[in-house]
Image (cartoon, rainbow, N blue to C red; front, side, top):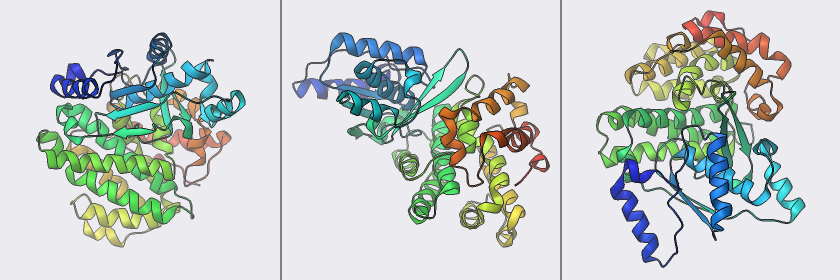
Length: 379
């Protein structure tokens, strides 16, 4: 499963020839998935797997293609509707009940960002409702994964930035919501990943063929993948799942995380102190802000995140996004109440239940519309 032959024919040829030289009989290539892994692509890939009856599936793609293939393997082996597997542990539950094993899915990552080649997540989108949902299950972790960072040299500037901010969001959100038991490990992963991304994002966009920069960015994004295996993402990721028709995933997370940072501020002071010092190294925050605490510190770190977005020309308010409407706010609020996505609420450093969404999440999204942090209501 791949679309690499369109983006990077030379690398595709090398991968294909290496498989042939290994004596493998190859079925395909078959098209990978569109951005955000639409359900239709999952169904198509499932049918191709059932028709070819392979010993294993190899997907050479970015995160969307890998996520769609993970989900397609689940459907090919367990049947049913994709909705049956959204949530936590549903795949393993049915595998155990039916005494089955998934077909091995070998993931060759071609884009720095989602780290889908490393994780237990499969993000799938219903294009009819423009809502993304998650399979969360250890069973869908690819048993083997490869990532040659030189493959990312053919990424467009837009895809490069989107992937970078997705990786940063993984690190940031896991760090914000880390449990006492996982805090030290999450902190080490997150701060390292964030610094690798912040230090390389501008150069990677400006000089896409600089392999050292590509490796730095790739390592940072992959640490985001390790982060989400230690903890979980929360607010910005949850809201981004309802904005798929107007914003790419990384762009949505980059835009939303500053506002969730202010909402979380009172509960993440230790994290904010570390982040403020890190951001000051890259002139994203004034050194005078390093003595701040409380809500004032949260606001300073939020503005540092906004400054990073502005450096690469990213939007910083939802109101500037073409197609943004009140319906998107309502969709996001309804999505946050969906039991299939409750892990995102549970992962928040400020505990929130579905019956608190309208009172506390709605003001966060209204603040993100026009950049007015004063609208955010804190617990």
